[in-house]
Length: 225
Image 1 (cartoon, rainbow, N blue to C red):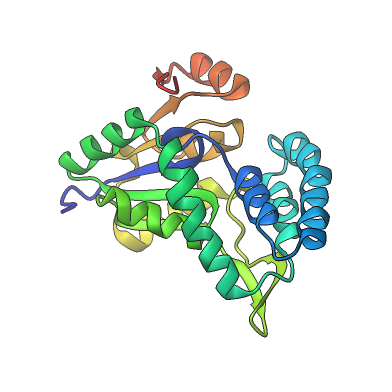
Image 2: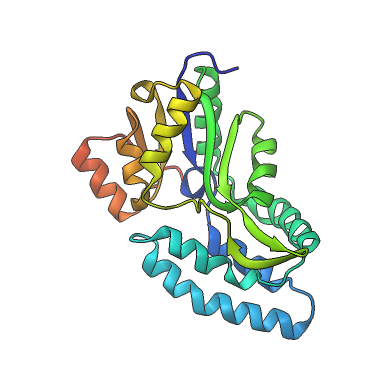
């Protein structure tokens, strides 16, 4: 039970799980119905992947929108089925034990535990249930029309530079003291979120975040191997 009026934000990608949106999109595409449909969707993933890598540091919202475009026309039932398979067969295998231990420690310290992810709700909710110490999940949601995915993400799209503003709104809504709260993140786009929280920690950081963490004298943890 969270009792301290503080929160521990965990960026799923990099802090808790190795891999991200492109990996999930590729799995969904590879398991579309019919050889022709699979080939077409995998081709779309191959086309969007370089843009995701390029935009990942500068415009993660657009990067995430591009990553999930290949899911267009998948039925809602098929998305749910593939999400379950992806979680059981891929996400569980990529769980980072170091991050799981940090999450358990955060719970023992009385923090409200929040998962923040570029992933889809159908994947991240089972992750939260599996971890068992999570209070809130903030992640991306696919748009469906007439039972089929449009390939678009519903707003707000997670991953943007509004993360600091979002954290402040979350804190106000839940009476959280951000100055005593913590955040664990791994990528450059999370810098604004980390700057908004009193106790940021870079975990398995990419080059951009590692350099910024050193300049800001933030702690750095490496446990991804």
